[in-house]
Length: 185
Image (cartoon, rainbow, N blue to C red; front, top):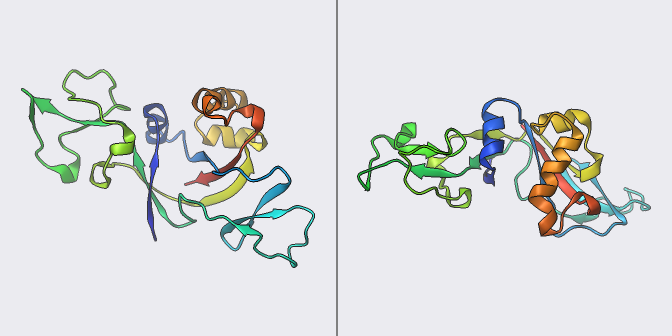
């Protein structure tokens, strides 16, 4: 089993902790050409031209998921801080996350030192681990109602609105229907 970090916003961390979020979608980079299709083969993910026979080119242009494979562990990176008192770092027992504060729990706490972005969270500070149980490749607009709920939303429309808030400015909005890694735990 390998371990892989994965970033989540405070809102999505809260949904994970509440049990509402059991799936995430991550943009495949670079995006494959439109004539290609994703499929799963023996636990790995590949691309191939949809007009080709699988027996002719069994592995297509192999692209491994950077977030791991089924059975691997994801450790969540989230916005965090070290509790400070009188400008001195106050850490008592890091094995129990004492001295750490998470934005998902209380974004306006006055006891927090400086918020640290999720990208800078070290492994020792992570409090959430998830084992990958599902992994597939899918276009964004192929999401089902059940998957939108597993993403932590009430409907597909709600999920797609949130998706555009996060990804449209980066060129991966619903208008281009990007390919994604679909990861479930």
